[in-house]
Image 1 (cartoon, rainbow over the protein chains, first blue to last red):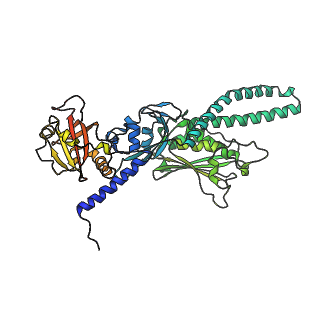
Image 2 (cartoon, each protein chain N blue to C red):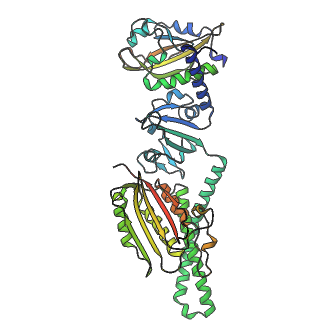
Image 3 (spheres, rainbow over the protein chains, first blue to last red):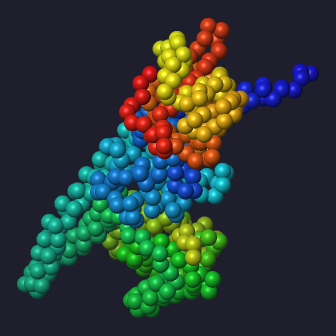
Length: 367
Length: 134
């Protein structure tokens, strides 16, 4: 049995381990920073030094994070002020997250994570160049965004012309009226698709930045509910748990309205007979949860989560007498919720129970 | 990276008697300070001998110093040597003075290492202006 190492030997071993760790972190292509609770850099690897301090990591220690992240622009190239809702400094107060930004002449994916180990308030910031595939995806998103905006105006003109023609429908023959009806229906569908595509790609490309503000969700939801007009015999119930009354979330009113409008459209569209919709708002730990139930056709096609992907239209939801949706609505709702720091999920299917349950989560803001 | 370790670099730096000077051994423990260093930063002569270089660094820099030093011992390369760096230096009374450090390293024939730095205080009663030179 060998003798236990002495203090000096142990120190040498520890030093070697520490050196190896530093070598490994310095070999990473991803820039890494540890920021302490006061907002100052406490540790950085070589890639971070190359990005921010001419290769000298020691000069990063003690620098304030806001200095390193200014100036910064969103992925669309729009400059972000330090107090802008889309600025990483603003977002990282809400916890783990990330996004694509233009910083120091590069397009970078930034990610931030809370690291509880050294003590409360420490964060790890990661920055890396976009992979070629991600760069291609960015270009594609910009192209789609431009295309959607370009198509919007001529489509509005076509739609307006068809409406004027409809006003003179009595002068048309039966066949022409049928063709006109089809043209209007398809134009309307195309219009919804373009609108959703614009909304999605505006988010993708940073053209639209949500204006997140602290908001009590319960009273806002009550007001929203009172303003909804649903088809005759349809039901839209809202129930709010008392514990959820005082819970605040970071939200953008317009985005909230778009999400709920999408879910409502979904519930009204995909069911037989008058829709029965129930909303329940609850507090679940440090999250606010809104359950959205309906008694429609439900979603059984696996994987069920594909409904949040773009251009997915489920075969089980297609009906010959009904115009298809664009397949973008739930994708947009999901993106909007994510941009508010929350998530939109499907609850597991309950056997013998008709309909679907969507669950929306938002992190609860501190009082 | 052998070119970083110019023979005689430590001795050349020590000769700059008008500047505070500190030298550490391969473990990062201080083995020498000059009277100018003791005077500018308020340390008693010999008080720092045997202590880690971390003693004259602000606490927020210590983790980085230890990691960087350990890394150097494995790789024998460092980006902080042979050019001026503005860093805070801790005085005997706990205050910090921004100083321009010029750090050199030297490897001896027996394989041992020595690290030395001149420090040019940029603030306080002994503040000086002008860039350091090796």
